[in-house]
Image (cartoon, rainbow, N blue to C red; front, side, top):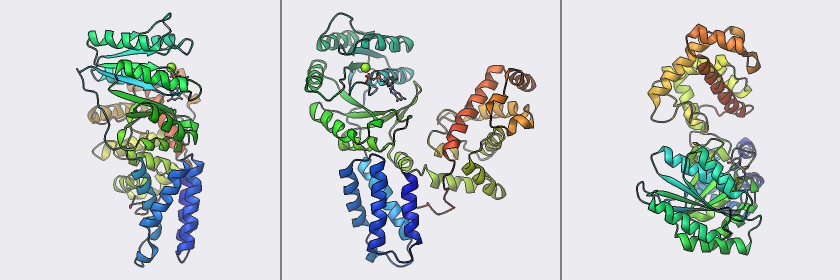
Length: 440
Ligand code: GDP
Ligand code: MG
């Protein structure tokens, strides 16, 4: 998507005169790219209208960078469309809240319920899970397994077939046990059936949830908008969780959730139990447009990386050949530049594990340890991007050489693997030159 949009903008900037026709062609191309990314048709049409309102060619004084103005307008419009505003309800620790999860079968409710509970448990909450899904065979077992693994109390039944009854009993019980986050997992169906919506309404009436979270599989594409609408009409959805963003989802489907507008907030969820990101509009739009936060990233690179090293680093970035040596060099830069992780924290997905916010000291120490270990590596090892090379005897040698435990060497290699994955996504990306994207 980002590629098509930047190409459209590029073509326009190559045109000597930017008139109505050139602008229209550019907007049409952007529209096509958004539609291909599964952004809902009506939304795209609205956006196009709004952009045309904002970008008035006659008003643009000569000398203005028109391409940048249009680019900015696209970015702003998408952000405006997606702005979730204030969350409709935020649970408070120590005060019992009932959260009900709804969504179609397979959308990720049960998985997400557990993650949501686990995420809060780690922050000192007392969550509990209620399985009100009597439709899917094995639903209770699945929730039980998840809950047991995460050590979260749960409630459900193998024999009772009335989801309303189970939900009511479970909520009652956990209220008595002073749980402050009582999560009700409900059943889904393969389709948006009348029966499902009726059941949702009944469970909702019986448990009086403080918040209903709609779980949506982001890979369903254009169908997302109608599905989100249908759920919204049946129960009062207060938040949305978009799942499976880690897969091949184009992401545009998730945009459709903005039909909830001011009444929701969105979480991301990824493969890991404790990675649960609160939705943030600007980085999301950047990601959708394939920009990452390139502007901030590039500014930081220009600021931090010594001038003579910049072209080389950028070359490496776009070639995607990420070796342990590059990781070492970047660690060096990171340690030099003061507030740690500023550069890489701007690339989505890069910093959450290596450099969590607020734990900079710890991260710095970790990076230093990684570098000690890498000091014990041979040139061959440093310049290889093939981890198969790192067999047991090499790992043992590095551990011995650096005086660090073997598990730590393995942890460092895991980190390398993770960064290499992020790095590989940059392969072939056109990285803007200094100033080029500063408006975004
Ligand atoms: P439910 O029917 O709505 O309760 O959905 P489940 O929680 O049972 O999830 C259905 C399937 O999707 C399971 O195999 C999950 O492991 C998988 N799943 C759920 N969330 C995600 C996600 O964010 N990413 C990926 N890759 N898989 C997910
Ligand atoms: Mg389920």
